[in-house]
Image (cartoon, rainbow, N blue to C red; front, top):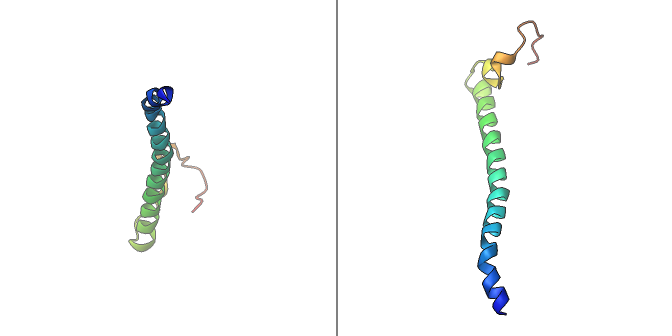
Length: 68
């Protein structure tokens, strides 16, 4: 019983890091989804240019066929 009481606080950090890793990763994915949906809504509803949909416009080949 004494060993369990002594070791319990030691593991609180691991539990905290586990929860932060679980919800931190989900939060990052959710932020990217919200950002992308915001850009798509701007193009559809606000007639924004489709160039805002390119995540890396500097890497786009100028001779490439448009895919939109």
